[in-house]
Image 1 (cartoon, helix red, strand yellow):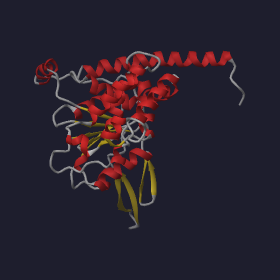
Image 2 (cartoon, rainbow, N blue to C red):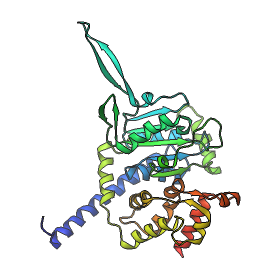
Image 3 (cartoon, rainbow, N blue to C red):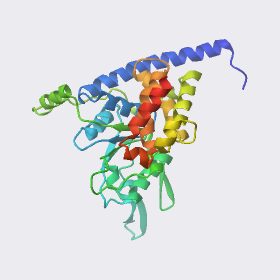
Image 4 (cartoon, helix red, strand yellow):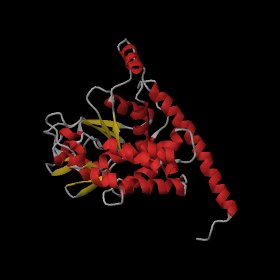
Length: 337
């Protein structure tokens, strides 16, 4: 493989710019279509879409009734993905998600096993109230999220592509929940906090959703186009300045790395996956905002959804009433200088 000459490089850049400009218009159309059905919650819609455009999974955290499920079904329609939904309960078994072997008998009386696929075989999987399922069932889902295939009775079955899990979780103070272990939380590209709607948005919800007809979202792109955009996002150049900002932010969130506030407040910090997530989602956010290259602002805007579920506070910090969000806000402020 020889070195590319400058004409080829220029051509390559031109191709990427042309593809990026087409992606910009597709993403703008996706945003407009989602906004017809989901009122307000711009940040929630943005971060959830960024996770999918970056090829990852998102964890939506909020109290019941804030349209988390509606957002996921809307995204399925708008992105043209086949979507399935699983409502997690304490008695759900791994086979209820993955599928199971059933025994068939043919005319001659011969018996054989046949695999019946579970709901995980969809392109967009809504895992509702994931923290209500037992650890065994959670791990079956999370392993599939990581490996993009499952194994049943020694046989491997590949999941469809693209494959995205958007899981919802109620805040853990509620009874009957099993908190997700730290290593499994790390599987989610972003944590998206879903808060109560603003007054104007809530007024719109009341007026638009209690009549006879509700707006139904239409499909803007399809699965193949989504995969093209995901590839394009990985090809977008990231400047050294942005790479350095990502490294410095992620490392400043780890105790024992020279940040006095972190040493006092943080029990354990984010691993390298946090940096990978920032690299991907910063590019996706640039496109989402109508730009062709990620900036420092993209990194700082994504610090909270990327880092929040990848670090924990010390007992002293919790006793002072601090939250992980406060700590991240402090780190971002420091980084901005």
